[in-house]
Each structure stands twice: as C-alpha cells, then as structure tokens.
Length: 157
Image (tube, rainbow, N blue to C red; front, side):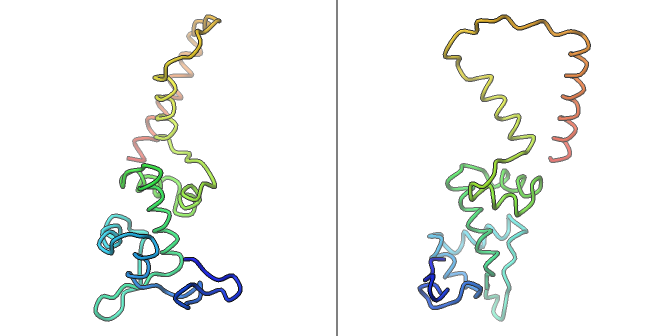
C-alpha cells in the first residue's frame, strides 16, 4: 500500500501493520474482489482472517503474497498451476522474492524450459567447431543425470 514515510500510514490513515478488508486490497491491486476470493480457493497460502458474516481481513503478509501472485500471473505470464508449482518447489518466501525480481526460479521445469528455448532458437551464426563425439562413459553419465532429473520432476508433479 502506498504510504506516507513520515507517519507510516497509507492514504486511508491505517498503519502499515493494519489488517485490510477485501475491498481495500482489491482497490490497491486494481483487481475485482471475486478474483481475490478465487485465488483463495487456488492458493492455500492465502489465509485471510474471517470474522462475523465471513468478512475477510488480510494481514500485511497476505497482501504481499497476493501482490506477488498478481505479478507472476499478470506480468510474468505464469499460469495458476505454474505459480502453485513455484510455491511447492521453492516455498512462499522464495516465490515472493522471484515476483519482486530478487531471484530467478530454480525449478526443474524452468531449467528444462530454458533448455528447450535454447535448443529451438535459430542460430545467428554457424557453428565453427565440430562437436566431439560422446564417449560411452559420457553417455552413461548423461543418462544417469537425465534419469535423476526425470525422477525429481515426477516428485514435483
């Protein structure tokens, strides 16, 4: 939330540690309220405090998490399933840091996706050297690493 640095309060007059209603969070993030409720059903990590009449009150950590989810979905192009996998593989703090641009994802899917992008990208210059043939010992090591990666990927799914 945008806040005055001198008072530590936002434009509504609340302190930075104050709980926010769903309408305040929706307005701050420029999202409809139903999207926030939908994300609650898709991301178990979003746990607003519910009071009488099922009113939701979001903690500052919830707002930070929802902000990160919005960044990953709407700006970075992740799918809901992709963000769920990030939470599962990296944890909430690392995923929030990723959304803030503080680190890069280190998931098997991200590594394999990057590898596919590199291998399918057109080459700008012809390769000048011929690659050495793979020896049988190298082939065995590559196969072992590949099977380990596949096992890790299966655990993530």
